[in-house]
Amino acid sequence: MKYVLLVFCALLLLITALIHTSFAQADSRHAPSSYTRIFYASFSSKRELREWDNRLRKKWIRIIRDSAGQPILRAYSDGKTRMLRKSLPLEEVRNQKLLVRLDLSARNITGRKASYKGVKVALHISTPNGEGYPQLNIPEGDIPWQKGGFTAYVPPEATSCILMLGLEEVGGEAYFDNVEIYRQSPQPGVSAHLDTMQPPPGRRVLRGLNVSANVTAGDLHTIASWGANHIRWQLWNGFTDVPSNRGGLDNYRSWLHESITYMRLLLPLCDSLGLKVVVDLHSLPGGRLLERVGQEHRIFNDSLTQNAFRGLWKEIATDLKGKPAIWGYDLANEPIEGFLPGHLSDWQQLAQQTAKDIIAIDPTRHIIIEGAPGGSPDALRGFATLHDVPNTVYSFHMYEPAVFTHQGIFGLSGGVRYPGSIMGRYWDKNALRQYLAPIRTWQLQHNATIYVGEFSSVRWAPDSSSYNYLRDCISIFEDWGWHWAYHGYGYSDEWDGWSLEHDSDPDNHNKPTTPTDRLQLMMDSFRREEDN
Image 1 (cartoon, rainbow, N blue to C red):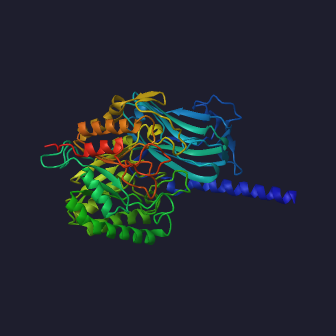
Image 2: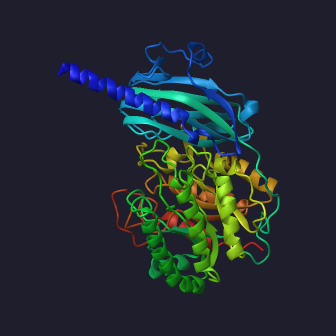
Image 3: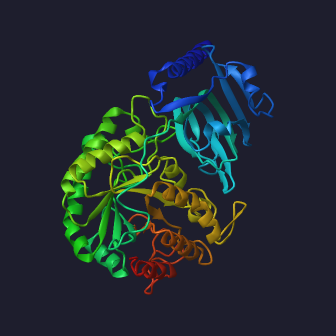
């Protein structure tokens, strides 16, 4: 029995190695044609490892050979941080969108205390404004060999950019191979749009709220009574167990058509209440590949789903053509590209194609584009403006600093105050303005229209901190003429952490009889005199 078990284990290791080898040889390693490879590490020799910053003993990080004789990098930790680092030449990466890809596996990863810790595949980007750590989100447990990847923008003001591989404050083993970094080639763009930086005479700044797909007529009356002039209607049906993640494209299409039919019923009421509607495709066809380390959207993983994305937007544009309440289409909420096989379009290309599809059907609508990954400000800076698409609006989501806005959720500690010292930096209105200033510069460079599609802070931040944060954000948005939508209205049937109507006690799920300070702030902001 002992020998049978040994033979079985040997075969299992061999199969794993063969799977790993097949990944290294797969055609899908080719990146999209708009990307050029600038870095590659195969860990074929110890000499190659000397080019990295590695101050750890061989016990923790070293090159080994798998059962098929292939060299791979092994990282081991007993719960501490064991990291390999490689500085990237700034002249190669500044003001560039990068694609980081590799093969990886892991065994017995335990003790992960926060979502950003664990097996680490990340870039550490330093700027005068602070530090950034774009990375893969890799779960605990055992991970079979698979491809992983993420995209990140390195701003022109970056002072360093360091590739990090290893383990952060977890136990277990991780294995890495075929690490690649690609740089996106310059994309064609334009420096003018029919919309301008400041709203022209007669056009309002959009000030409003995000709403869920099950918003009611009563909700719309309430939102209008507060003074909002638009809603960002999220076509969303949950995080994971939703039609976009199960049942295939037919099930997704059925759900989406039902959602659009329901929206059409309420659009006349929106029009009569003076509420413009931004249609936000929040749940994308195919959902996110939650079983993969990058958890990228499926539209960047297979051609069938990517083609369906374009086809569904044609159907939406046809169904909603001529509806006066519709202001524009937010093509994809917080897109995640991941590994990006070479036979598919990246988000830059797919957004351009989809926008052209829509305006061929209805040229009067605004096309709203968020950057990848995740709709962050830096992601937008790495996006080239679309060409030949009038009325394009560029969008980002504002949740920085996340350890403040998301305190008490996703494993983040509570008790974080604003203004105040957060993660070694003092955050106040000046810091927020400094953080957002690169977007303002990007806006001026491209004569672009900006829409802050989401911003928020959990209601239980101490000492009126959420009020202070929202007040300062809105003040900056208004100074720069940006459209904005708070996230979000209601969600009481899902989660009330963002609710303006609930007080700061996280255990109190009843709405007080008088407006909270955050709700009063929002109503006062909605009712500003319109810019002329």
